[in-house]
Image (tube, rainbow, N blue to C red):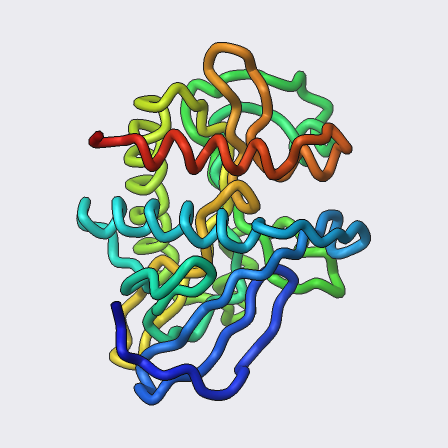
Length: 241
């Protein structure tokens, strides 16, 4: 376990708090019990949610790191906190869709549940006031949100992550429907996969039943939200046993 000491609060978002440590190159990330949806319009608190997201995200980042993906994650500190490299986040969200659902169905009128012949990658501009609008690569380049070399690296890492996570979750009978990634640059200039990877940022469907095991249970008032998160963690934690 890390000996890094938690110091002052740097930032508090909808689902996490970031704290400085006695090392200027690292931060402590604390996962909250908060649920939000529709850009914060729907909110709730559920005890144990932060623990589950921390456990799940830590395990996934560890798996990706062991498979050569450059990540900000260093180690899990306790049930709700993890130590990570301090990064400056690109103002971009990268979404990968393997099966159609959610906003793409509403936006384009396509059928839900279509397995795409290849993965679809989309970019969104991180701005809560604008509700994170869909953008093109040219938007990112022309407005200075990322350089061409950055986008090339981000796309390469994203496709690698998709391949790894599809295999990872297929092995525990879960379909990786879609997911969101964020990236940042550390104090040494390295481009790293950052933020979190959890049922808050991914859509997971059970292979056999089609049950949703992610935040859609909260968005759509399906109930048993924490049970779904617990099921994801139960299957992940059984791997290798």
